[in-house]
Amino acid sequence: MGSRLSERVLGSLIACLGATGLSSCSVGPDFNLPKAGLPKSYIARMNTSETVPASELVASVNLAQWWRSFRDPQLVSLVERSIAANPEIAITLARLQQARAQQFVAIGAALPNGELSAGAAVGTGTDNTRARISDTLHSAANTTGFNHINEAGGFDAAWELDIFGKLRREIEASHLDALAAAKARDAVLVSVIADVARAYIELRGFQAQIAVTRSNIESARRRLQFVQDRFNQGLTNELDVTLAQRQLATFEAGLGPLAGQVQSSRYVIAALLGQYPETLVLRADGPAPRFPTKVPIGLPVSLLQRRADIQQAEFEVGAATARMGSAIADLFPRVAVTTAIGGQGGPLAATGTSITFIGGIGPALYWPVLDFGTLDARIEVADYRAREALLRYKANVLGAVQQVDQAIAGYNAEQSRLNSLSRARSAALDAVRLSTDRYERGLTDFLNVLDAERQRFEIEAQYEISRRIAGVQLVALYKALGGGWEHYQAVPPIRLPEPAIIAAARESNTLRPMSTDPDLSRVQP
Image (cartoon, rainbow, N blue to C red):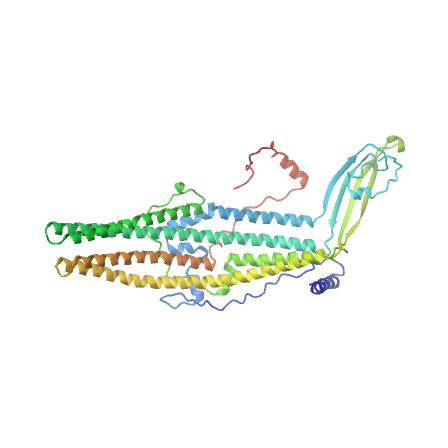
């Protein structure tokens, strides 16, 4: 570890001295993200009735607002409401504002700073106020003949020259932290939108299953009445009546669980909208959203620009790299210029005057020449943190491609199943019609009719389940592709920082007596 770090540090120092002649520079590595090595295309292919070039397919649906492709105004409204009120989005926005404010902290550390100081005391010695004012003011010798310096005060300022770029690296890191926080918000935005769409599709899917179940219950009731009439006329036996009653009860038993699933989906939507379920305004029933005929897949390389989590990881690599440079800069001297002006006073009888001007200016040098390897170890820690961030970036890219491939495969499989069930549903309706006709003409028994109706019910239920799953898979695909955050980049401005004396006056207006109850009145929503 030592030899590798020594070569790296020595190389940075030589580069700085050679390029700038002891003027300021920034040691440490610069951020250069390696190529992700993405495949040229996805393994899975979308099932489509037309051969469409990838570039045209991308333009066929607006990925930035993909939920509109379902052509459901209720879904669009829910998504817009969730963006405005979701608690998780609000949390990430607060984190973003923290990161933006932290940039001012880093910038302020690189600018000159000054403070007022004063002290007074009574006693013996050449300086009774030494512990009460800055060292710069004390650097001026007591040449006024005071035996007792009873009062001293003034203004002092300091400015670190940042010759080796430690502060610039910290500013760079804080800027990249803010960019990463913005992308973290975007990633949560995409996730919330997808969760709302998924919950809504499931809600409408369960409602469609309830509609199918109720339709079959009505058919079973009519069938029971028909068999009961035939039994009363002596045209059939009691077994047929019992079998019809059993089938009706079986269909009715399926309503309860489906109603529970509908309520559960409503609760999920309410939470995503930042509401309690009883306050959720949602149309009670409605058709399931329609699926778009084309889905914009594009190429894997486009994920680098669309996936907010990948961009977040990229900025995190940059921030970790910048902090590594800051750690390396700690090995080199730190130089600051300090200056102060003020006055000191002593007994009036000593000099005939009570106040004398004092001042001082000069450089200050700090160089940790003996630290037993502590700073070197900090560099190693920063190095491994940068490596960790880079590995996380590569893992995110790999995971993004895998998620798209998996979502395409799942959506294709469900679409194929849906097509087969559509054909089976038509055949099941024909089977019910034929078996009923044969039963009424006395050519078959009632069991064949009941079996045909049972199969029709199962196929119709499976068809609605498949439609719901296909919708969920399509939402997963849109989420994997990364769209949905582009039109929601507006962020409220943060308050610009003010000098400490002005901020102190402002905050004095907000002081309150200490209380055990937290005061959240200053917290902005």
